[in-house]
Length: 102
Image (tube, rainbow, N blue to C red; front, top):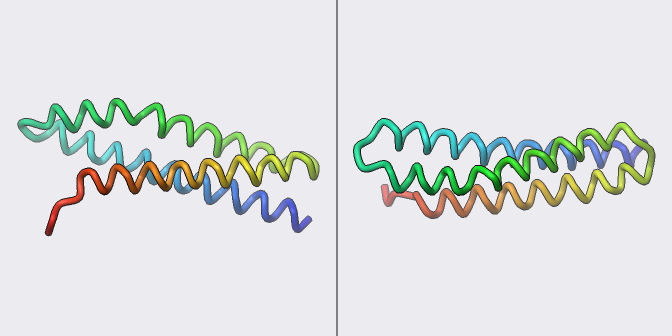
């Protein structure tokens, strides 16, 4: 029971990080498409979409694994934590690249 709760929380945290990265990329793409000279940003966003999709897929897989037994919970914890760390690092890297000084 406790292991399943930990697995569920890890999977949800991974899902949240993956969705945050995807949402940030969508916001950047939307802004770049509306501005003149936004081509390089759009190109960067297109290159990062596979990373966002992969972390989202792993997070959803981890969430699916929480319905299994104790071994599946251990795998869900590892997958959820991995997708969370990957999504968070990708989000921070993207934010650092486009951070304005103000």
